[in-house]
Length: 238
Image (tube, rainbow, N blue to C red):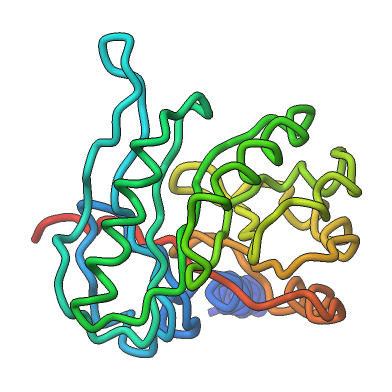
């Protein structure tokens, strides 16, 4: 093998190692989203917290309903769990939060440590004030033993009103650095803005997505940063 070929081979190997080091390895994390239709795998053996997708609030035939999804109520081995509900509208009748609370209580009575409810709603950045109003109303319907958390978009802290964002009545914000099954291409450009947050926050990653250790280093400089949450993907059938 010629010298030039050897150099190219070394560069290729080093590049491959670099790319591998910058991929989200679920086994290296401790908090996960487990969406409906996704089975818990050995990658979750070190899980301390799991966010269980338990349903969606949507409009069907002109009526807002709660569609139950995800794992049935059972005793799980995870130390703590959140119940995640996807909202597609904020025009929600009172009966739906009451039903969600009842579901949380059932999980708790089965022997699980239920931290609270996580709302998954893609509020537009310019509508954060309206979202805050909805969350204040929802919080009043939650028993005091349950926390309230939300997922968030990268753009919220960068271009949104930071005072409104920091005033959200939540115990936790998980900012998603991905869309669908893939990491946002320029996600690192948004990370410095997260240091403006004054509420507990985590960063949501997608399994096998892009992630570099130095990206988290800047987040750890914030006393409000609480770590990562990995969105687990459905594995192909073998």
